[in-house]
Length: 197
Image 1 (cartoon, rainbow, N blue to C red):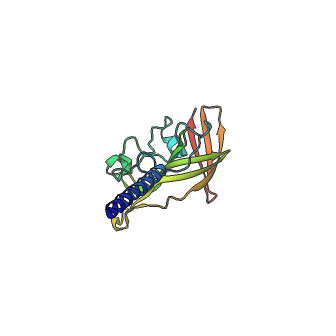
Image 2 (cartoon, helix red, strand yellow; image 1 turned 120 degrees about the vertical axis):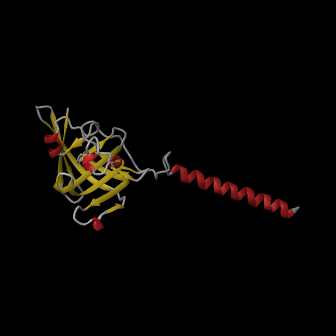
Image 3 (cartoon, helix red, strand yellow; image 1 turned 90 degrees about the vertical axis):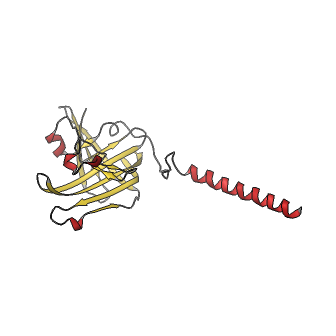
């Protein structure tokens, strides 16, 4: 009898501990199982529509570009298009903040002509905390893809460290219907992006 009672108590205690651990783990993750990251609301001077680079603004003043170049669920880049330049709409160098604290960034470089281009893409997505013009990015996804036309053995697709990153920003409004934002990255380089208002 004592052995059965001890087993019953031990089983109940173990179940309680496991349930507590499960609840604690769930509190640290969002509903998709991704680790929860800090966020604040983002002010309207930077949140809303995507900001794109000068090349994109000159190429298409209506800014028909896409920042979402990577699907973390499938691991597929460029909506399964053979190259980034075949993706519809095309990828754009840019950044977007949502009012609820989400962010998305696509940055890339390329060299070559026509469809024969080597490229390096960086894709980051996550949550952001804003204090004045300082924003801390908390990536939940950070990927880098490189493709070499001349030597495919150099190609790679890898995950990058998802460390928090601090940036600063300054916006400016033109009278011609355009805004620009200067993003100062953690290495003190500055990138200028544009959007229409």
